[in-house]
Image 1 (cartoon, rainbow, N blue to C red):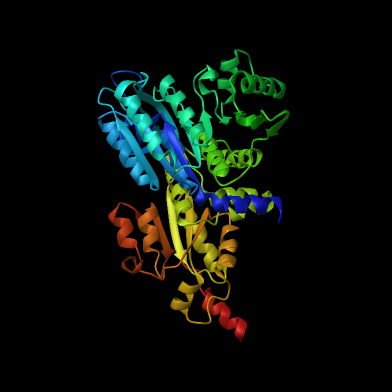
Image 2 (cartoon, helix red, strand yellow):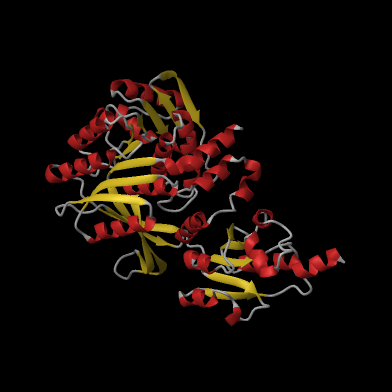
Length: 489
């Protein structure tokens, strides 16, 4: 088994991970619209809003990442009795697979970050928050919830965004309880005094955070290693994993002080670093929970971070994406396009966050011929991103008969994914693409002009939510049936 195969096998086990997250939850609210004029009241743009979405942020984003990696996650945090708190609960429910045990404190304001977006550009951000340390009944309720769920966890994550949940007493007692239960502890620090995190197994500061903690620049490998070594001994930390942006990551384990590991950055494109640290913590925790050693877990976290920074907004990554990224650069571009529905949905959300129009077409695509190429070229011209849904083998047999398909579903998907016009390929088992259209809600549905508008399956669905149906011109004399007839004489 190759090293990549071993890592892929580890990723396949992510579904067994059980992670308990305690920390500062918040809601990221994205308000989208268009700017068509400048305000007459002041020299600022006027955003004409058309839609918005709510995404769990902070510790909520850590939990969201764990769930996307197929891990089982319980989230404990503190919210106010307000609209933002309600929105956060709804966003956590929509994320799925997250058990949220949130403590409500009517005296607090739920932390909310509101981003106003025009096209691909964020115009500005407005924050609303309470940062007072959790104390009294709120602190007691947080610790009670933590102890209630601790036995069911393999790994504990302490996600500190300096919003007050991990106050001194809460943090200290949570670490003590986790140690008593023999649970691994991963902490993402925001406080400059790392003695507060004494006893955690892995600390994951970024470069500015560790520089602030030691009061000196950390711009070189030597400086970062020296800072990490100082922290492991002074604060009693088991290991430090420093995230360093374009310089990658550095791992230092207290048990191996003379063997720092430098992991180069894997991002091919950096679009948005929002939430990348949460992805690192989530991947690290899930990998450790299923038996990975720390260097292996750090390597997987580094790969996941490289994927998520190429996405817009508070993003997540999925096991299939990480496996594809590990498979090698020679096949990565093609393989990464062939994804399951959940990954496709995440990509669609990312594209929409960038202001891109999503197109969709579907078919058997048994033997690719010039007619297919013409259809896909026209489809891509009608949108910014094109998803091609391909009937699975069993579906093709039901539609075309027992002698079809000529090529298997993966072979057909690989050929389609190799085309520049195609951004994603999704294989579906149903006879129609209706479930995919309901989930993805493409802006444009493209089919060949051999259909009339009222014959396009899903056309009424797409038009009902404001989408558009486009009929692409056909290439005369080109069809799979015609090609097979010529081959068989």
